[in-house]
Amino acid sequence: MLWAGCASSAIRVARRATSLSAPGLAGLLGASRRAARPCSGAGRLHIEYVCQPGDPDAAVAGRPSARVHMWSQAGGVTMPISPNKGPTAGGTQVTITGTNLAGTSAVMFGTKPATGIVQVSPTQVTAVSPAGNGVVGVTVTTPGGVSNPTPFYYFDPPFLCSLSASSGPLAGGSVLTLTGTALSTATSVRFGTHTAVPTVVNDRQITVTVPAGDAAGAVAVTVTTAGGTSNSLQYTYVGLPTVTALSPTLGAPSGGTSFTLTGTNLTGASVTFNGMPATAVTVNAAGTVLTGTTPAGTGQAIVQVTTPGGSTTVPGGFTYTLQRAYVTNTGSSSVMVINTATSTLVGSPIAVGANPRGVAFTPDGTRAYVANNGSATVSVIDTASATVSTTIPVSSTPHGVAITPDGSRAYVTHNGLSIVSVIDTAANTVLTTVSVGSNPYGVAVNPAGTRVYVTSQGTGTVSVIDTATNTVTGSPIVVGASPRGVAITPDGTRAYVSNSGSGTVSVISTATNTVLTTVTVGTTPRRVAIAPDGARAYVTNSGSGTVSVLDIATNTVTGTPITVGTTPYGVAITTDGVRAYVANQGSNTVSVIDTATNTGLTTITVGTGPFAVATA
Image (cartoon, rainbow, N blue to C red; front, side, top):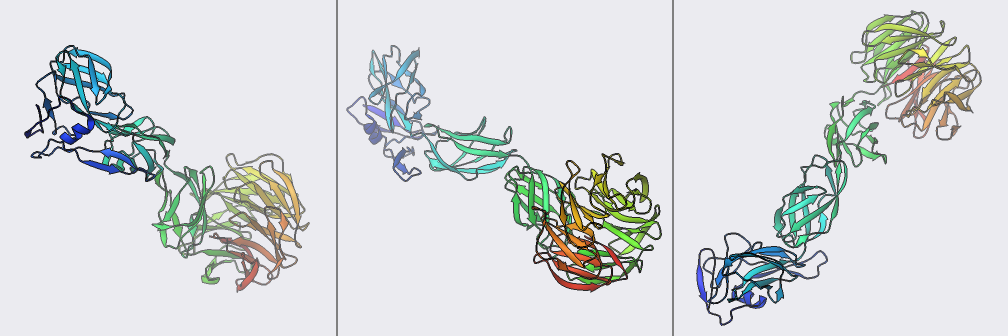
């Protein structure tokens, strides 16, 4: 006679046998069976036993409150073994506790003998489970006979099919869903060397919060259940993105401005401007350079970069402003403002010093610096109010102006004195002057802000100034006759110099400060501007009334020269790269060029003797 009972009820079950096979035990215990499908859809059986008080039969559950007690009139008496479940491959060490267990000679898991039997005490035996399947009765053989059977559950090994995300932040915290088979007894999920406790959804699904990782990179993810440890899937910890620079920081409210972000861990990034997504986002293989196009917006925008590793806010953000072109008028001593979205004049001319020449914007677009050649001053224009906020006295004949990328310094050439003035833009005072070749005209700062390139018309050379020391570094670079304009590519690798006396453009390697090649253009080239994407250079040809377009990749002239006004001089390209503005000194106009087709769009009448153009 055997007795069996749940935690809160017991019923008498008459049986003639003193030991039970696995099927017999399952029948005796009223077990319910539930099938779970594997990833491929092929059948794999998982059996779950639930003990319910009041059941007509005694059923078994894997929870502590549902214990089954069995005893017989002969042999040892056992209580539930611990643990009472293990993998089908066997190898689980179990502890069997009961009475009359002295002299244990065998432990059987159904019809299979256990190994590694150790008599701990008359009331306790340990053994190692053999391989098996489903639920089996565990019995102990002693000199007094065979004990009642106690259930042991074999579980299939877990198998992982997929993770809901293959990567996440190094700090952890993401909630993943793991899909597979035989997951209902999952106790832990391992991410490399770190372990997390999962929540079981069902036999095919669990969720887990990813623990923090040790370093960025891939780790193996496995699940441990009563059936053992699963196969592994790869999960990649991603470092938090960082951004060191955004260029440009200004753009049109209509959007469409091409921008570049530099930083680290940018792979897989998306970018938003005040919550609106940027378009055409691409990232280089190293994850250090991201390019894209701004959406439409207004005012100051918060720029957010989001990757699988997290999100970061770009310092300084982005400002949507009226895109403008400033034109200096040498004959009328004024600056005129063009709305580049509509190619129309905005407001009244801004009065500056006599014979204004060069003009340049600060990187944030809030100020414009104008070199007044006839009055030995530099006017500082507040672009918000379109008024002169201060006037800086400098040496005579100031001509060209360039401002460092951080906006802290302005470099001004003096074509009659063979010097360059260095202005502190915070105090708007001259810090020092640097001696260069005779008749310096053009000036440009490299994107890193470490070097300044100055053309000297009188010596046919280019001087290079080290901005850290404000001294000339190396020997002057010999170029063509009467060099005027200079511009540097966005990547900082090359400088383009227009040689008005030889009808050429010299291409300088900034790594070696040597001339790589010389390109023939139109008659009397004056100024040069490079598109924001670095693909093309635009050169004004004063003597032929045209603009030549150079392909930067091949350093050759592309297409037919673009006809503009009389005596074109200054040229500038909008920050989004879609328009080029050319100051025609002889016809008092500005020509607007569509850079997509390299054709003239319209002509704007400005003041007398327009000389230089700058855009922001």
